Amino acid sequence: MDKPALDLGADFPSLLRRQGLLDPPAPVVSTRAEIVPTESTTILAFKFADGVLVAGDRRATSGNTVVYDRADKVLEIDRRSIMAIAGVPATAWEMARVLEHSFQFFRRTQLQEMSVDGKVRALSKLLRDNFGFALQGIGVVVPIFATFDAKVSPSARLYFYDAMGAQFEATDFAATGSGSPAVRGILYFENTWGEKPLQKISEDDAVVVALRALDTAAEADTATGGIAGGKNR
Amino acid sequence: MIEEPYRWVEAIATRRDYIEMQLATGSPVVAVGYVDGILLFTVGQQKLFEIYDRIALGAIGHPGDIERLRMAAIELASTEGFTRSAADVSLRRLAYYSLSPVMKNAFEQIYGAPFLARLLFVEIGATPADDLFLEVDYDGAIHLRSTNEGNRPFAVLAATKKSAEQMIEFLRKQFRVGKNLAETLDLALDSWLIGQLKADDAVPADDELRRQRSERLGNGTISAAVLERHANMAVRYRAVGASELAPLIAK
Image 1 (cartoon, rainbow over the protein chains, first blue to last red):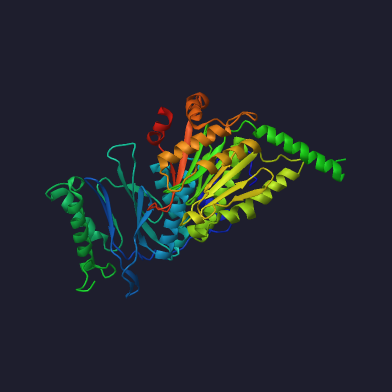
Image 2 (tube, rainbow over the protein chains, first blue to last red):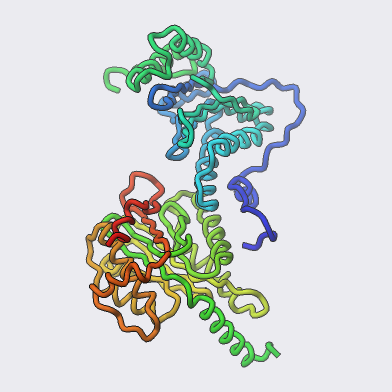
């Protein structure tokens, strides 16, 4: 409860670190090891007429084995933001959890919602802290973050990140994971040559585009689960 | 000299008088159960706060002290909720294990500053019988208000003991199970007005109370928040909007 004379209160990750509940940032050691691309997944997001659609396949793999086909890769962070994850699940889910609590902690302590820029930056910081692990090839996470900013119009905002924490705002669409090259092709095509640009299509049409894109990604990428179920699923 | 037991007791008593005097102008806080959850109500500056998914706080006292205690409560609840789960965050433990000893200690260390604050925590459970109304006083004393199986779901925080008793007495008479938010806001405002009475004022009749509303409210702004029982969201706290409060002032 005692704290230095003046500060604005710690952010949530540093509060956790002070109590030993969150690992300190991994040291970035010089290594020649290559980053192992373990982002075996496909996640995509694009803006449509009424907002942002975020979708992902649900396959989790370990080497050549499919371990699980009900993995949640699209996670609700709060009422206004969604994070979709490609990468090592343990790290990614922990990140999502820290992020979710950080936003709430901020709202409760500062008595206002964290700004969109603040949220985007918070995720970037987590990725940056994780970079040491990413370099060791054991915790690469490449997320997509979608949120909305009620103060500006159009309000939907979409960001994708690299493993080092650089954030990029996407104007129309974003895709990451091992199946993303195919998806990016489809979304680019739909957006540029389709009947309407993605930002003008309805929610129903948006779902169709997303499912078709995922199906196409699964066709060529073993680490991406398809969308069709069997007769009994 | 303060080491002598008698002096110590005397110093504590003086300190108690001093704190009571400091708190004597505080605007009361009312917590009342209603059909969809629990309402927290007060008039004046911001002093209703969200602590965690199911826990809210109302306070009277010095803003700086309230802020320190509020931050401590949020930090404790948030780390607990993060390492375990939201369901494992317990108001009981937060108050008994963490806040009460710290406040008692500050109060009794007569060379240090005590907390000039009185806190009312509310926790919403799965059913009205599981709701918790818990008051932590400046000396660390805890009053746990039994909801009596959900039949008496209210608690107040007042500047003096007498107004607290009058407010509770009023709520005991007027409270009915199953009222909606608008009716409960009415009840809370009336109870707040009772809490504003001077020590020797008699409790006015209902219609008299209604007439006094605008006069006693003055320039004060009503603030109200609810913890909703069956909200679809994990976070049950919601500030009551201006449109929901408008009818109260119009009457």
